[in-house]
Length: 258
Image 1 (cartoon, rainbow, N blue to C red):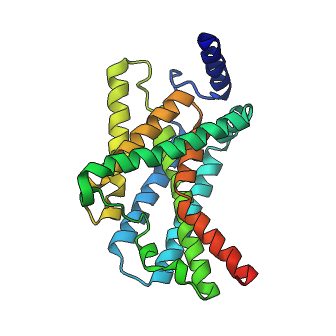
Image 2 (cartoon, rainbow, N blue to C red):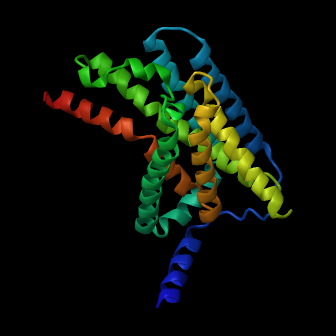
């Protein structure tokens, strides 16, 4: 009975797989465009850290740049995303439950990684300006709109990060026919770079990014296991949407006059 249910789960997951990493697929023009998007994203992070400007301008930039880069990546990888979505949708209910479980698991792992080290791994905002926006005290439409934009930004950030790190800088690197050692090294280096990219969110402290290196490793493993980008995108977008849900609730309360 156990082997039969295990086989059923394996069969269901295989229908969602849309990528074969063992195919030798050299980087093409689409991948080079994705790397250009990554460069633009890194410049955006540097701008957020080094440029001192008004909260309103910073929030608008923090929304507009990741949103624009997400649109570019969507257009660049549209055939890939469409193929993966078709496979993901074949067992939509079950796959959404997997995404929900991975979302809960990521939060649990993040808590456990931070727990023994106290303030060394203190959480920091991906968009520093959002820390100055107290949504719970919002009394004007402008404040609500600005807060909504600030909390929407991490959703686009997740799309950019996963598309580039999980596909361009993982699946498209030609190591998948060259032995387990190179594959493990690639996964670990990718995870390190993903976490280290968050260094500007922690005042330049590299040790504080270690939890995000662990998150990057788990997301890489998830993509390697499922071979479908929508599992990772769904998990990461949901992970980054916690603040957005609160902003949406406040917006609805404002509309209803509550």
